[in-house]
Amino acid sequence: MNQLLVFILLFGIWKLMTWSNDLGSYIAGILSALFITLLYGKEFPYHPKHTFQIRRYIIFIKFLFVFLYQMIKANFVMAYRILSPGPPIKPGVVKISLRLKSPLGRLILANAITLAPGTFTLDITEDTLLIHWIYVGTTDPVEAEEMICGNLQSILKEVFE
Amino acid sequence: MIDLLFYVLMSIGLCFVFLGCVGLLRMPDVYCRLQASTKCVTLGTGSILLAALAKTGFSAIGMKALISLVFLFLNSPTSAHALAKAADISGIKFWEKPGDEKIYPAKPRPTVDSDIE
Image (tube, rainbow over all chains, first blue to last red; front, side, top):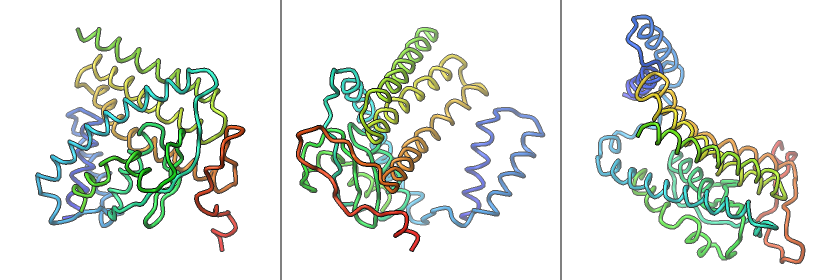
């Protein structure tokens, strides 16, 4: 099942990228997808219970909209910081707690924080995230988590766990 | 209509990429520079790729742009994180405004030697 999912995913991406109906493209796609599947197929994070629950996908789409809004806001804030004289920055490092366990969820959370307004994932350990903040608002871990993540962490927890 | 969308997306993208470059010059240390360049350049490049999709429609080029967009959003923050962590491990100091109180360090910094041991 793992291998089958990886194969379908890889072949789908190949077909989207080449976007042609040649016989050669099919053969090359099947061969290369099969090769990678045999090498790495087992490591695909596949949860038999989670994959077919529609609820998780709906929540993930909601997460994407929250993320997109955050990212556009981040760009305007950053444009303001870059263009105003004597950059209005007060950089520092804060620590917030990380409750997600699934590796994919942690990756997506770290990437979302990097693209969120003024924050940047510097390091990640078992249960903490070390975050570089370009304008430090507070050094208290709980308040910092509220200001940086908002509800991103709980949304991702619903999707991946 | 499609042409208008193309020009608007392309202009937004170029503006943000330009801002990212200006940020790279104006920010004081490597971490702030990474912040400026990562955020602005990710959205700028994404916007340029969307413009390519709008111009060519769902053809070979458009689909390549769309897939590049997904991989860009997955990889750009990750590579920035790798750069920042490498800078941190090799001991580059955090810049701070003269006169402000110290906000870092939140933890004892790991060094390369202790990681190897």
